[in-house]
Length: 259
Image (cartoon, rainbow, N blue to C red; front, side, top):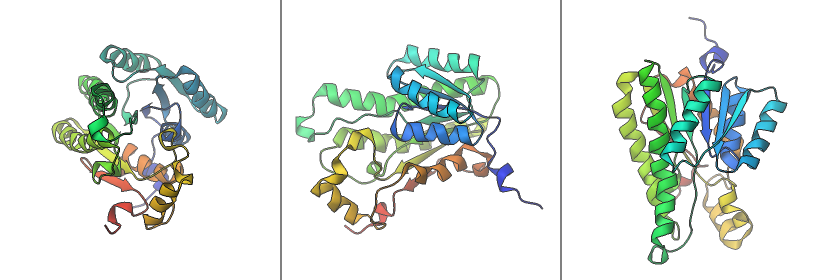
């Protein structure tokens, strides 16, 4: 049987929604999906940053729809998914990337900070995925849910308790989604990045603690956003047609480093 890698990874007929797409990894995900041929909706709280992402995509000939969205607001989520459906079509690839962090030791973490991180990083993942999946089920359409977890969902670091708890929740939520939605032809998988430069860690890698952390990564470097493109396109396409409930670490070997 002839094999065509281009056809195997083809997402040219897909509509993708990327949350947290105004900057960082979310922007990179949106641009990668667009470059691979998908029509892309980009969602986030900051309209100006979404417009920057949209311009980058349009400059490369892509089709993009910016949607201002706070994933902690159920009404906004429903309206955003409906807007994307009316302009681009039914979302059949979702990248749940929206996330925040409130660094600090657990004993000093306020209820407001705890609630904000869980609401965005975990409840938001459930809320957006469920809205997308309801529409896929209604139309009897397959789809791919890609949740952005973290290696901190599997290992811990002091001062990031709420973030760690939320990302561990995302990993198990992904498995629950996979179990319940597989019968409908809807897959749910997670990407667990290691350390990548983002707005949340700006300047950290230039500190002594940051350099020491890099030295503990087997590959001796932090990730580049492009390092996530391959696994993103794998999960978005039919190349992963028999994969669901998987959690794929992209971390330079960090999870297998010695204690």
